[in-house]
Length: 174
Length: 434
Image 1 (spheres, chains in turn blue, purple):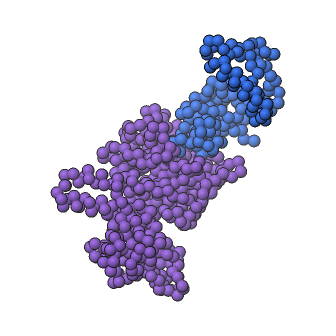
Image 2 (cartoon, helix red, strand yellow; image 1 turned 60 degrees about the horizontal axis):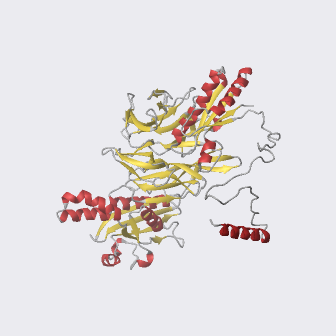
């Protein structure tokens, strides 16, 4: 791009910014310099906070609470590494309270055949049940039920919806 | 169909017999529905009009079959109600191949006679003449469907299914959850009856061979159980509520047993046979994979089922008395929910076709697979009792709806449920028993 064109663009941008401040955003204040070798650019560094720190988490009401649902990858009944801690914490709770019961509800996304999906949901619930038992929870404390694709939480047909529906819920009767 | 047959016959006349089979396949793609005329029925009764426009019902049935093109009333040069008044020249001029005439005669307060005649225009002869003298206002629609069935069978050589019914599940969102209904309707969507409603899922309806009962899975009380319900009375009884999965009921051809899926406490689904009277179960499969969706062959010798013992789901069959299963499907990575055609020649399934879940039919003799549907979430195929049409669920506008397709894939219909909601799991009834 020639210097002339750059200057022309800059002038237009300033004019537009001046007359239509509401709709057209200000040209970004930038410490990037153009020119010289085509394609090369330089950047400034060391803003106010090099780490971009901000306040976080104080108002999260679920902080410290035990998650009651974990999710699964497509066509998988493996508890994901990031959810294993959740299962272990449920196991500790059940281990400390031998009278406590939990029902594991397995679910699948809507793809494919309904009764086969009942099987897939059950497989997920059983994977969690086995993990609980390995942690010392008694078999009599855990029951499973699979709803297959019959009780979705997300009703759309996107990958995001499917991911939300592939889950096991921990249900503690009151 | 009439046209195809005629062309086949022509081919024979011209000495193309060797190529006849290929010719039929070529013709099927361009087959035009046969033009016919259903003349408005005559009315002899005490009131101004007959209780039901019978010709309208017959016309709609034949048109929706995709094999017939009934002409409009405005194109008819004459409107006889008695066979003696049919002028074949007129009908030949109009270009129809068959004509139906008939009338409804009131014989009592709620007693009517429905009579009709079917004529072959080119042959100038009567093909069917039939009367039903004990029709009531409540049964007149059924009688009209029966007339359509007889006409259809005479003209195509295939038994009509207009007098049959369909059961399906509808789910409507309500509050935070869903309301599930098990519905039975005529195959054309009329006479919808909700036979069971629940705030918990209802699944897998299955007809008894005498079409008087439905088996289904209910999650009432957040646990699966299998029920058999008599349609006429609404009475139902629980046949299975073991710990874990109770699912996928399918009646044996003699109506005495159900193939079901049981998961047990350890959640390993296998196919069992449940004797309905004694409630005794016999295990058919023993594998740590998911074995489910058992479905009987019409001769009662085999139970076909879905198993993912090879990795993904495929269809297997096992002798109904037990034994080692034999794999049936090999094409593609996902084949599930087997259903045999009542004539035993075809196997319908949910087949993953390049990422889309579609309805496919396998010819059991030739072993070739024909993908019949065009959606991406199609499921629950069920054969009509004439083995010529399938009904299944597909998605449109984010909702489940029903479609039917001829077993050759050429004729497709969308069906609308008046009950609305997310409609799924259609199952076609057997032929009614008169």
